[in-house]
Image (cartoon, rainbow, N blue to C red; front, side, top):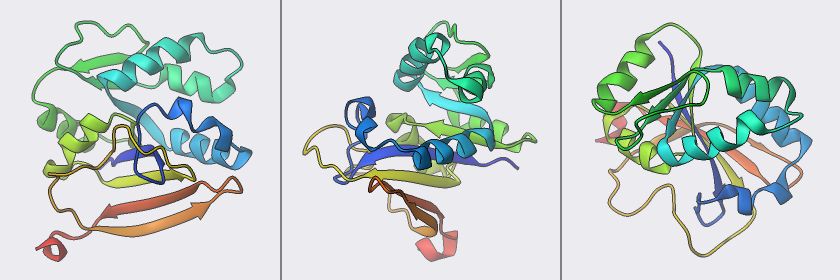
Length: 186
C-alpha cells in the first residue's frame, strides 16, 4: 500500500503561506538533497488547486532544473479542486468529488509514495479521514507573525509519533511524524 506523505515548508510560528517569499534564504545543498530524495521516493503528486496552479505555472517553464525538473513535470499529478475544469500540466488529473474515496483508491494501488506538497486546505481536509501517513515539516528559523497556518483552531485532536528529524546548516529542521496508533488517540 502506498503512503500519502504531506511535505510542508513552515515558519517557526507555523505559517505556510507563500514560502517562496521567505524560504529561499535558507536553501542549501542539504535541503536540495533532501527534497530530491523525497521526490524520487514518490511516483505521484497530490495537490490542492492553489499549489497546483503555482507549480503548473512555474515548473514547465523553469530552465536548468535537471532530473528534478524532469521528474516534477512527468510524474502523475492528482489535483483536488471543485473549481478547476481543466488541468493542462503534463499528466494531471482533477479530482472534483469523492475526494476521500479517490485518495483511498490511489493509496491501494501499487507504487511509491504519493507526495502531497503544500496544499494546506487539502491537508486539513484529509486529517479527519486518517489519509495522511506521514508529515514532513521543514521548519524554517523565521517568524512572520501572520499568514495562513497549516494547523489551526478547530482541527481534530491527532496524536503523532516522531519517526525522524534532521537539521541543516541553515537552521532548517525537518521533523517527520506519523499518526500514532488509534488506541493511543483515545
